[in-house]
Amino acid sequence: MIEQSQRGRRRRWPLLIGALVVVVVVVIAGAVGWWFTGGAEYWARSRWQPPKEALLSSMKVHPAPGWKTNVADLGLPPGSTIATLDAPWLPSLVTNTPPRTYLLVSSPGQTTPQWWLIGVDATNGHRLFPSVKLNSSADMPRCFLNGAAVVCISDDQTAATAWVIDGQSGVLTYNGPTNVRLITGKLKAAQFGNYLIAATKGEGLYGVGPHGETTWFVPGAGVVAIHIGDIGFQGGRSEGPVTMFSLQDGRVLSPQFPKGADMGSWGDFDGGFAAEFSEHLGQSFIQFFDTVGRLTNKTRIDGQRVGGTTGNVTAIVQSDSFGIYGPSGDKLLDVSGDPPYGMQLIGTTLWIGEKTPTDEGRFQSYDLRTGDEGKPCAFDMIDGYLGTDGSVFVGAPRDIKSANLAMAYDLATCDRVWSIPRPAGSLARITRIGDTLVRTSDDGTELMSLVAPS
Image (cartoon, rainbow, N blue to C red; front, side, top):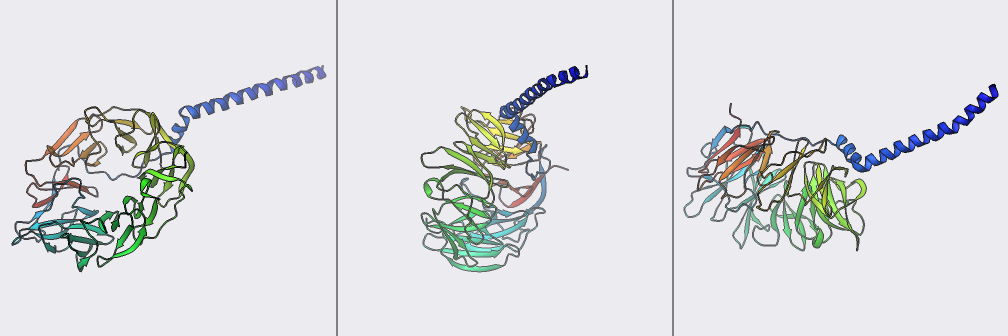
């Protein structure tokens, strides 16, 4: 009787083991299926964190002036105006390292305007130092950050003059000739991060020293590309190999780029960059790097090009769709349709621009926690985007002929909540310095912050 019971149990063991194997196989198959049908993106989204975002003060209602300062407060002669440009594609005259900002001012001269450099603290409107007198010329000088200094250059097409000013004290440390130019194609001045560089196409990039002279040299295409902090890039695509280097001293870095591959499109994000590569007769692929060029993910992601970046996410364009990837190259979202027409990350919501037949802005929102698609809105989050308080975003159109200086939209309802009209002939501009919105008055004689009304 005992022997029969033992034989029965022995016969059931293979059945139990077989059933267990079937269960394990089903579970594994289900897990694999889940992973390849969206589970990988779900897992990546659960681990992804948005970067820290500097928010504006509340913009839910029409902002009011906060601090105010005028040309007299800044120690400038009567009739002075804060300089503006009629060409919106040129660099802004507001050069800032928040909360410090530096602006050009013109005052009436005997035959030509007299130019000045002023420094203002954007937190309170106080001047940083006495106004620095530059030259008297019909041609506006240009000013650049160069580490702790501000370098202003005037170019009359035959020769150039530099003023080097201590950005903290306003002390003029050098005034004299410079071989760095504004007009010619050789040693042309350009702002690259927090540094002034001089670019000669087909030759390379130069640093600029304390007397306006060229210093370090990085050979290459001589074309300014992107920068991440104080690390610069030059070259790429038809412009030759890409070089990564320090903007402070010209030291060349050795990024972990794939050997023998050409670098195409790229985009920088909070914490690094993504770049497209192609090998001879091979398909293009994208890889992710930290800020000094170290690989953060060895996976080669199939893709046609880098389609844009915002915050710490990147769009990678495929044949009929594009993917949204986190800073280490993990896919967060798959989106069908045309490549993005601009992107904006606000908190955990990604806004993706869509091109419309009428060229009007249309942005579609996606929740990067759930992957859910939200409500589309008929506004433009790229042209002159200044920032958000978390529920409302503010933009200042770059076109100086636009009807409004600035507009604000509710992110939940898509409604315009306020606008600041642009009077005919206005010299006003609105910009962002740190977490503060700052505007010039219509007559160009006053600066003020824009804050929530008290």
